[in-house]
Amino acid sequence: MPTLTLAHSPDADDMAMWWPITGMRDPQGDPIAGELGSPVLDTARWRFDPIPDDVQRLNRRAIDTADLDITAISAHAYPHVRDRYAITACGGSFGEGYGPKLVVAASSPHASLDHLFEGRSPTLAVPGLHTTAYLALCVLLGRRLDTHERLFSEIPGAVASGEFDAGLLIHEAQLSFADLGLRPLADLGSLWKDRFDSILPLGLNVIGRDLDARFGEGSLAEVSRILRDSVACAMQRRADTKTFLRLHAERRPEWLDDALVDRYLDMYVSEMTLDMGAVGIDALTTLLTHGARLDLCPDPAEIHTY
Image (cartoon, rainbow, N blue to C red; front, side):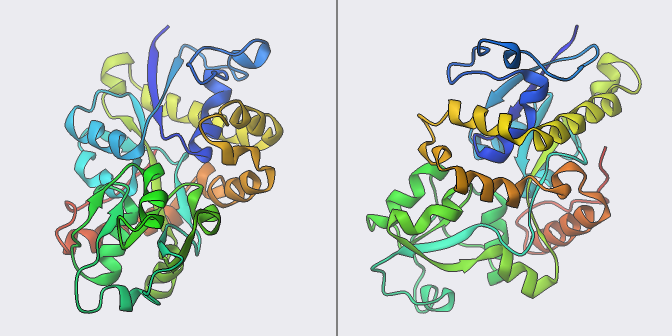
């Protein structure tokens, strides 16, 4: 039985999608006791080994070594890996009029996005140069920005303490920033909608193009169908999904806030996550074409999904 590596970011939407085909694992990576510790869906001839990691590290791994069979990446990273990875129609996240937040400390003198970049270059913390948050901000401002990379979980504290003038927030901090001593200057998804009349692609799920060569014709499409079934199952069984997230709340205490988790899942595990369709492909094309024009990423070429 072939085992495929299935890497994902440690935020709630990525954690939620894959437990139906991996079984629920505890924070040490071991299957939990009981029936949910095993896959609840028929995975046919395949087994899936979950690998949670920071999305920028996954971006770099996909670009540098491409050693994962299936992995989450930022939409920004796709043109860098398109010769080795194909996009699955499921598993993506999209800001449908909302998205990453550019924030400052509550006491900051900066009153707006224009004010922040007026006169001098601010010190800006971003969760990675291959993240969509960084790309979208550059496109909206029309230029490459000088930034400082930090782990996504470190950015709120670093901005609140004054280490940086501003920071880009992804994952659940988009919703909880006010409790962290921060205030927003811009919602990139809202600005993107106003500028381009498009949703903002954020994360993608990609799969190795070599699966058919390694495991036989049709393997890539077969695995993609199983991944879609997993997303559908996780959406249908939300109570189990939230139970799984609470198992990991020692590392992510915000997952004990039931209302916050529901709100985040409503935002980023949607019908677009189940199948991005033509709308998602058009949104990706818009994002990456504008990024390529600024020489922030290679040309994405024509985008297809499995």
